[in-house]
Image (cartoon, rainbow, N blue to C red):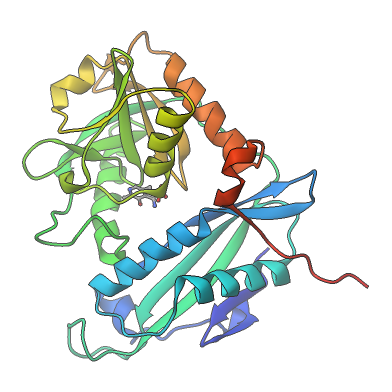
Length: 309
Ligand code: PMP
């Protein structure tokens, strides 16, 4: 259960973290957010937050695009988050949600001359990691928001209307998830996750300019695949029909974690089972985030324990 939030520049009971229906961000979606995970380490009996500084770097970049004027830094946001999680004192995995928004009441639809604030809350998500068993995916009839309209490289609140259109269409049409194309018809990403495919042993992912989010998990996968598994990783445009002849494919993201794709538009990917490279990357990813690979400890930030009396 969530007991606290960082709100109005202090950690307070979650019940006090309320905003008005007149709030500008609530009315127009002008804000941004982050999504981080903390993984419970049963041996050390502590939670480790994964790549917290990289997440806050992207969060501040998203806020910068929205002309936020606050004085938060990667360091201060990291400290606040660790204190919040310390106070929550969970002994399980958790998901952390920082938000940057305009605290003004509804007024001008503009980025500048607003009151920019930050709020953070987290949620416990259980001791066990739920691994995704494999997805049936369809190509969305919607297109990804374009950088010339709402930039997809940052996590801007309003752009998740686009994600919701994509997700609902896919689910209601009997798929688990969707692949969405950019305006020029190349693969962009999933509704809330980045995309990779494997062809002839090479890992291929769309470039960020295909209107994909600058994903932290995407970067993690690229680095692990190259450094630990010796795989070649290529960023290039992907056609829709190239998906149909991929050997393997998967989504990755903080929320989805690693999600193998078993079919696209009713065509099996490979033999319709989780691919060998996907499995290997996925296993390594979960080992890394749960602190079992010593050379990637620097991606983990332990939550300080509360003094127990
Ligand atoms: N794309 C979108 C649209 C997302 O919402 C997310 C989740 N943050 C991702 C990709 C994956 O990004 P990350 O690995 O940084 O969580």
